[in-house]
Length: 190
Image (cartoon, rainbow, N blue to C red; front, top):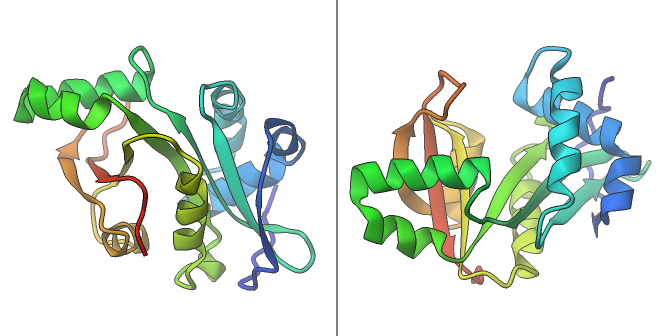
């Protein structure tokens, strides 16, 4: 399962849940390639991605090259109490910064759950366009995301889009890496 890299984007498209299900293998191959994860990761993540499609406010946007190969994908949904990520982040923000800050960020937010661009296509504005298109349809007050700590193109992108620190050097249950949780108000302004 290998995604074919191509830096040229012919189109961006919002995908329905059925369209993502149809192209799930391709989307997960892109994810594994972009994140440099080991083989087998796609099979582990597939059930989670399929479950996310059913969440309130789920939206997905993808970039495609001239041969209709996926070069980038982003999806997310309305964050809510009871969701694993929500509970992890709320606990971390509350412990470090207090309940009022946690409540301010997490009362009404869109969770930018996944954003991936093939390595050969990174640095060309695809990620930023995916984020803008994805959150343009979100009716929430904030957008929140988490990303591994350390210098990366992802951090550069989020800073360009004026995301601010909500929680830094946080360890999610089951993952030894430190993460940053970033957020910003919606809508995104150019």
